Length: 76
Image (cartoon, rainbow, N blue to C red; front, side, top):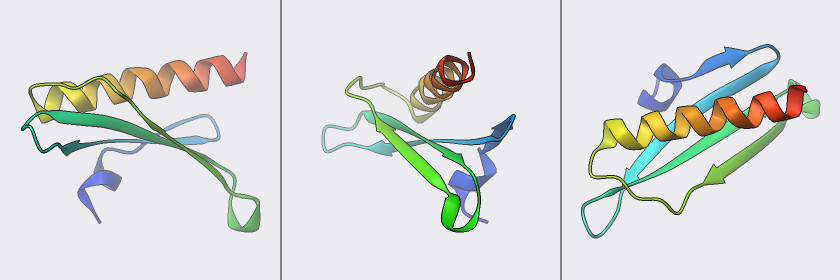
């Protein structure tokens, strides 16, 4: 299992996977994948954010918050 999948969590029928990558300047850029469905009916949206964070943990926390907010907006 990759480190990204270890951070994945489900909200209803959505699978939310936050991640963060180190940038050339030493800060971290968050992103989140939101997946729904299975097989040929799978839809996966990836959001890459412009905000940067001084730590991997803070970038992941931001991606989790944004992923939860996006799923909440889709479900309502």
